[in-house]
Image 1 (spheres, helix red, strand yellow):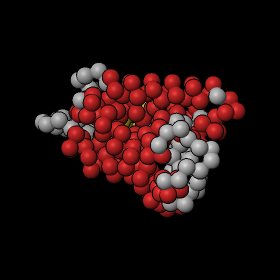
Image 2 (cartoon, one colour):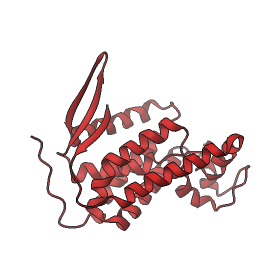
Image 3 (cartoon, rainbow, N blue to C red):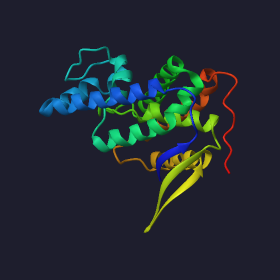
Length: 225
């Protein structure tokens, strides 16, 4: 399933959502400019669980405090598809969540969800010396918030089923529910080079924090016709 858009209008310009997308794109362009120096940059700015657990900076030594990689890592991406997929989800679901919270509260929420995601990944992979990068943990928190706030909003989805390809309108509770179940199943199977537990941690953080950050009264429920 690939989301194309949601049928859930927002009532303010999503300044932070657009800004976060722009920041991720700019960092990715910088990554491309590094050429052969990119792996070194990833190791310095990515989140390495072993380093965080032991507060020991493994070579190559970074110029920033190890805890700060909780933040820097969520603005790095491993390739164009990695970036494009994350930014698509942020664009579709971020505007409404930002609308419900306001710009500054949304930024704090986003960073906290990214932190939740990274911490769960660290706890599950304490001895890993592989750097973790990507905005998907923070964006997973946005998805969790969207599920709580707009469970009946419609998500226009490109659906693949063997040779059948269709565009369908799914309630957010179904689309995001299936998405989360996929993360759980994939985490259980392991492998694939994807930080599945970061997605789970970010999503859970979003569900837990959303009502602390969303302004009251909460947005009215979106009705599925």
